[in-house]
Length: 181
Picture 1 (spheres, rainbow, N blue to C red):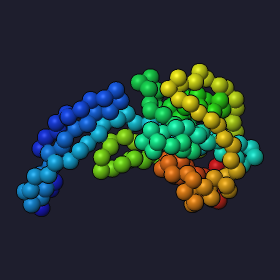
Picture 2 (tube, rainbow, N blue to C red):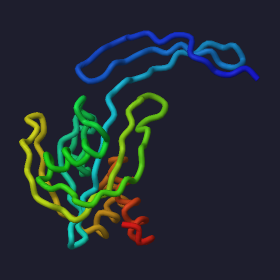
Picture 3 (cartoon, rainbow, N blue to C red):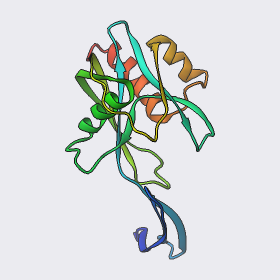
Picture 4 (spheres, rainbow, N blue to C red):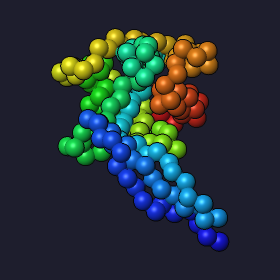
């Protein structure tokens, strides 16, 4: 059986963080299709859970939504970051002022398989310690502590719409129920 294959990848636009390409694809039946492809750096994210079973979420403006969203701390990997866990811990410190002494890896997700190559590694963190890093000047963040049960309700009623945050909260509930973390 003949397989789908990429014939060409043409750079169409380069921004400060992403590159947009046009992929020319040959389908098994010989038809040629054109697809968009956006290249971005991988990222990492951390759901922080305190001793009172509250999650630390950040409220920040997102231009894509033109609204404020509730999310777990996250960011793109810097060139010096050895692992996604290093990135997730750094972002937790920068965005909330806390970092976990106990970390549990949850998933590595492809954020939009039909368009972006960006993967996000998601971690759960407990046993929190305080260490505020210098804030990112491009971010205006408010930190909220929300009971885990309320955060779960916020997923189901649509107040939390960010994919990595939803995955992290649902994963935490699963891991907690299995007594793995």
